[in-house]
Length: 289
Image (cartoon, rainbow, N blue to C red; front, top):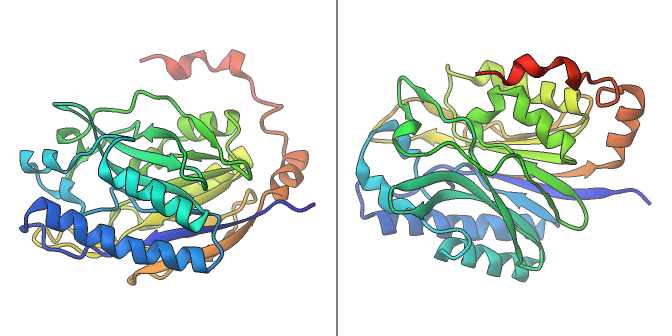
């Protein structure tokens, strides 16, 4: 019987001015996403992924301790509890990227994974943290992730998560494949002129090298007051042959929904035996500092 999984990616522009109280900024985006999640459910999605730190603007464009108060616990914070309720309501699994607090002063860029019955399944913490001019001051906000490259069994698919800047590093992409990921989700926040050329190259290359599906998400719009560039959307699904088979617009809110045929993974891996032909005994130098 074919293993077809219907998935959705949500790309969305920020709603509220960052100058407003942080709770208002967060609540505006959460309310917007409740509606977008409903649209994904109506499209028949079994699994939906939101964009990087979905509930606000990309605040890493500045360095201000004010944004530390944007953090929440996982899974015990209000946003993840809400997403568990929505998952149960819609019978749909969710990948939910938020700003996580582990303890005071220890913060991570994290995605929680919630099953279609509302069960919290675990989380991935962004591993590679950029500090790149102009405007990507992420080391000010996030510790590097320390949970490795987990995969999550949803019952109908095993998924992994990579977050934004992680996509420039093939090592973690390979680890997710070796850990059994069939679909890897990459929620991102990236702007025109910096990475739009790479956007269409790197992740399809990961899909080919590891024989799995990639689901790449990027937000849209220009976010004042920073105006660091245009978030160019273009969220997409890519198959294990490196072919982008569904793609969203560059400049509009969108719920991109597509059917992912997981049987293609076996078909491709029977031709390209990259996992069989690996030589881990020859790769020791890759993990030296």
